[in-house]
Amino acid sequence: MIHNTKELLNIQKKFLDMEVKSFGRELVEFIGDGVSTFHVVKNCSDILEENKFLRLMPSEKWKLKKGGKYFFKKSSSTIVAFTVGKNVDIKKGFKIFAAHTDSPCFRIKPNPAMITENIVRLNTEVYGGPILNTWFDRPLSIAGRIIVKGENIFSPKTVKVKIDKPIMTIPNLAIHQNRKVNDGVRIDRQNDVLPVISLINEKFEKKDFLTNLILENTDVKKEDILDFDLYVYCYEKGCLLGADEEMISSPKLDNLASVYTGLLGLFEADKNKDKINVFIAFDNEEIGSATKQGADSNYLLNTLERISLTLGLDRIEFLQMIENSFMLSADAAHAAHPAHTLKTDPTNRGKMNEGLSIKISAKQKYTSDAYSVSVIKQIIKGTDIKIQPFVNESNELGGSTIGPISATHLGIDSVDVGIPMLAMHSARELCGVYDVFFLKELAKEFFSKG
Image 1 (tube, rainbow, N blue to C red):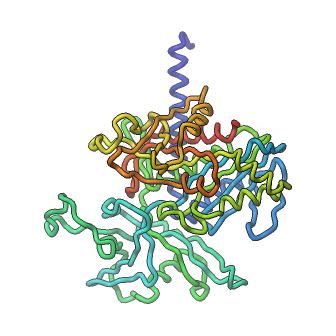
Image 2: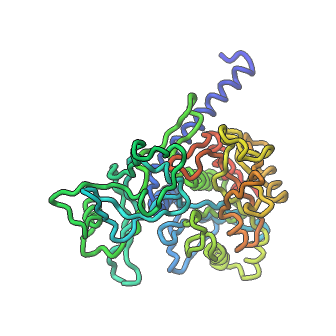
């Protein structure tokens, strides 16, 4: 029997804690399956189909219904999902949640097998800005896609590849041969980060080494393979971490945490009555977004116009929709590092499990301004969602994200939010489990209100 209010609050807190940590484990599982951007998008599309979203083909004519739920893909690495209200009000515009599917890693080059002594290494190219030394001495594997012949030469088929076992590592040089390693050593991107994958034996064929490895893990025929986009991924899965499991340690928190929370927020939002809710996860943010499937293209703008025209709106009504729209750009944010507090702003620093960072920049590296931040403050009023302002320390340049890029193409109000984390761009990053839950709840409220 509950005797007082304090006991009731303790019980409620315990149940919330269980819900939050359960969601954290869901995220870890989602990230573990998302070994490449192609796998991330496939996992998202599977979740969408399970939730009765209808897949659209960009190359075909669309037929949209009011009250409908839809999704489609671009280049197998960008995904868009949207819901249409039963009575779309032009004054409500589009409500857009934007994230990105890619993370820093290594891309495998063509003709990758390199032999030194009796050791086989794979020739790779650095993708994005990883903390290179965090990839050393870890079990690694290969994932991505291969392109195979189709009926139309301009439309070859895509087959996802995931080698689900540890097959490689990038070994450090022993300290006895590198005495200054703990003083900081320059890492050569062409030589030092090539993963060791095999030792020479009598069966070794250098010419087709990677192709033969792929064939062992797919059902395709060797003569049908045309090309590949393959990447190195960390084989070790994420986990809840801390004395009370209050943190998440995982690869790719930047930015699969935002992808998963935004997607679930779209599902959990109250029934859409009068607006168009849009979730988009772009590829290539880590290399500047200037690709056909990246944020620095007209892809989102063209998509929004296509939705409007398909629903019977004219060009003028579409432009009205744009003027009434709002975007929430969700990416990672920096938490104050306990060993390097001077690297963060003295009064506007992120703290894990203290709330989502509202990212602000005088140089407009982030889109947040007083107007858009005020919108978020009103959205979370009456909820348990916490937010905190984040501004880069003035001597630090900081990074940017898709917010300013997309807002430039669309010309709409936008806010940049992020989960505070440590070790951003490491092979394993660290964040608070409650902050992940806060972002999911914010996405739900964002799509529900307005």
